[in-house]
Image (cartoon, rainbow, N blue to C red; front, side, top):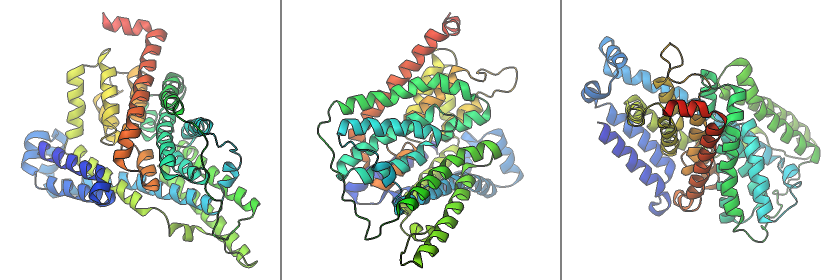
Length: 460
């Protein structure tokens, strides 16, 4: 069963990677992969009970039946996936609505430089810190919308978009609200706000800076900006600013909403979208009377990138099947048995989890690690704010950059810009790996210098 499920998953990933040569849309492949994995798993009851099932799973199946077990897990994981899908839908609608109102002109008009090197540094630094304030996926969506207003050439824009992915993931790793896995560790009590920032911000910054240094050293000349056309509709300046600041304010409101209410972020995103929706309805009615026809959220939804949202659905449901089948949990246990939970073993575990998070979703991998090393009880191996958790936040947050489908930010950018998987693998993945390793070395070195007693005491 395990071999078959993993083989199906690898074949599905291959077809996603070969989207352009095979001319099969990656969304169709992802949906087929998710559906087929669960369908195949439905016929593996005996194998699952005999090899991978936990005592809790066996007890549930005995008390009910196999189909009830599958239905319960499908509903649970569909709910988790829907949270991300609706979050993405809300964020994309808000960003597209800002774009429809030409709100990004306020920012792009203030970026005067056309120099390729300067522009790369400006956009990367902006992405890095904005990602910590919002989250990596929302920031990536905002930055791609900006790139479309600044860079005309498609392939040149792809390079900048690839660097945006690296910067967004690096920026989200050091903030307690910047990445979904860091949020998990923060809410679970594994890390605290001050510690996660202090212990990982330098490593995350290095992870972003090193690739930017490499790329900028090869850049020469200026970028060509696109023609400033708006389809004959000129939105008044005060309305551009209003929708931009409202939209950014709504996005910033989402992590605040989560912190105050402890409710899922997608609720805050949808609430913010509703406020912006009502505002644009009122504005559109007013200006329609004056001969203008301004957009509303309804017109914006007509050109939202639905295939990207469905791609998320397919990939996440495929990964959830591997999780329910016990494959991801078994992987985490195998890493622990191989490397151990002492120094430097747990550093290797975190590094490998980071690399694996570029292939499968980092959420179930981090969840498996949290389950393996619970904080409660006298036998807790890693206490709160242990370097294991901080390094896990860094690795799981930045490791997804190694492949374009390895992070929410990457998938969002891939969908919006139609970036080819193989192109990213050739042009960006090696840069992501260099930055990932450089940041990891800095993190480990800082732990050696700042807390040498803990390192050497465990070594001897």
